Each structure stands twice: as structure tokens, then as C-alpha cells.
Length: 358
Image 1: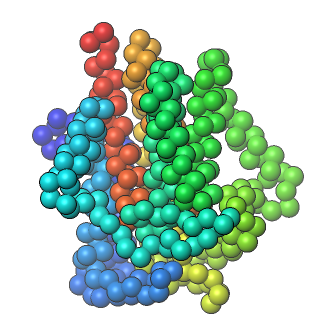
Image 2: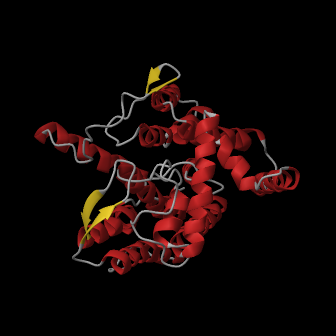
Image 3: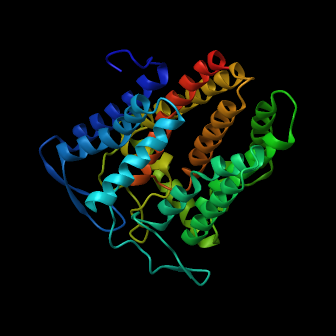
């Protein structure tokens, strides 16, 4: 980036600002060298100021910038994964880490919830759901049986997590791919967005509760889980309004004693911890990234492979953003999310060069 081999755009600055802002909020609330307790569902966890700041920067802006610089096309993504695989085979060291003690003993619908190398089964489910759109699109548009098998493997991974949020992500991806396959009219995505807005407005008009509460309460397999999420949003939003600029950091947020410290929403957690500035910057960056992807899609009418990649990337990003209403991204899942956002640079670079090659 400093050598200007990658063109900097507004979303890049916004993502860097997001990372710096979260670090800034942590310093304001906890300092750089003090040791403090992090309020979590597993009890108070001890953390040191400068360590938390470094982790916040690396997991967000660091992951994004790594993808932004390294991923210059689809081939680079495959090459990176192969490099990690070969290194692990030779050394026995897993570069992505192995998490011990995940809640694999939790039963739901008579099934044990798998977590894999992730700290929670929900995060494993989201990770398994992330590549579904790509493989399903390859199977639908390119008639690749192998891609269909991998899409099925993605679904099996989602099923083993027994997570409603992971199912939601796959459902959004599948519905979006179906819409793209069936609807041949111009501005079909604008029509879809308007339809979603109209549905939200209708719920707001006819429901006795706010529409966002209705949506959140439905993003779960059980009524109990949906009800608890509504309570989290109720108390959490009060905390946001009490400190809307810099949030409260990693301190305990005000809630009843019987309510878990866990915050089951990425967007709500950002607002509570770092104020409304953080989610606003991230959301604006994502909107600009999607707008840039849409322009690249239009420029490449003669490059179906490139258009397919751009479409799949956009659908995946939107599905994870929606899933973030009902799950918090942390640990590996947070890194994967920001790395995925950073991959847009490689797709648009490929898109810009595609006409010249053809």
C-alpha cells in the first residue's frame, strides 16, 4: 500500500479508521499498561491494555490490509491456502490455531453441536457457511459436479453446528443465488432491496413491536433464545445511548444478574464496546465496497467468470452482515470476516484487467 502498488480507496481508510477507533476506545477506558478484567460469558478474563489494543488492530484492520495487499486475484487465494497446508504438513503446526474446550457437549435437537477449531459452534457454522455461495454458484452456472459436492459439504458443516444463525447465512446466500438465476430483469438487486425495505416497513406498521425486535426474535430455533436476544438488545441499547461515542470498552454492561454477559450480535457488541462510531464506519465501508463491486460487475459483461466471483463475494458479505444481527464475531471468525472484506481488491483488480486479456 505504501508503495502504491494497490490503489487506496475510501473503504480502505474507513476500515483502518475502524481498527484505530476500537484501539483508541480501549486506551481511553483501560489505558495501555494497566491490567483489567474483561466481562464475558465465561467469567472475568484478565487482559493487559497494550495486548488488547494490538489484538484489536490485527484482527480487524490487519486482516483486511493483509488480504488487500496479498490477494490480487483468485489464484493468490488458492496459493495462500496451499502454503498454509504444506507448512502444517511439514511442521505439524496449525497456523490457524486449535481451540480446546469448545462447547461440544451441548445438545440441540438430539445432536451434539460441533465446534471444530472454533471457540463456539456458532462460529464454526458461520465459517462452514461462508464458501457455500461460491460452490453453489459454480454448480448452478458452470455445471461443475465437484462444486455441487463441496456446496453439500458446506451444508453438512452448517448442520453439524446446529446453529440457526449459520442456517440464516446459508438461506440468504441460497435465496440470493436463486434470485440471480431466475430474475433476468435489469436492476434486479435494486428491486430486491426495495422489496426487503417494503417488508420491513410493513412489519413496522402492523406489529405492536419494533420491526427490528420482530426480526431478531425470529433469528433462532427456539422462542427462548429469541426472547433472550430481545432482552439483550433492550438492555444493550440503553448502554449504547448512555455512551454513544466511545462506548464502555470491555467493562461489564448494565443488565440483570441472570442475563449472560455474552452479546449475541456483532453490531450491538460493537456499539456497546466502542460507541456508534465504530459500526457506522464499518457499515459505510461495506456499502462502498459493495457499490464498487457493482460497478466492477457492470464493466465486465464479457467476463462471466469474473462476474460470478464478484456476485458471490457480494452475496457472502451481505449474508454475514445479516447474520451479525444474531451472533457476535470474535477470534478466528472476526479475522475471516475482515479478510473476506479485504479480498474485494483482488476481485476488482482482476475485473479491471479481464477485458484486456479477452
